[in-house]
Length: 72
Image 1 (cartoon, rainbow, N blue to C red):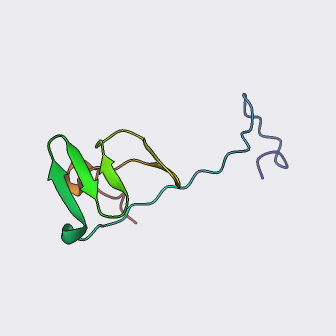
Image 2 (tube, one colour):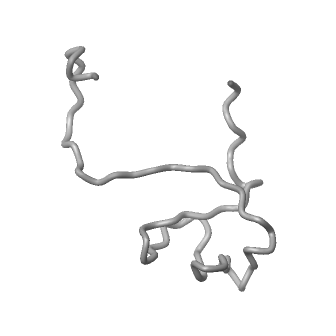
Image 3 (cartoon, helix red, strand yellow):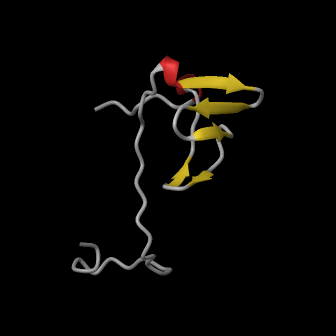
């Protein structure tokens, strides 16, 4: 779209696909283990950091540590 409008963007285009989602995980599916979060079916994750898994990368954080959604 921007190209058709003549809007430039310095840099390169990546072939990687990224997705972002905000999800709520049921309390029974997570547990704190020291400084990590155990996510059932995934493993132990470091909060606030990208964690590589067999299916890609996941970053997890407690909901109260995130910003509030922007008003609609």
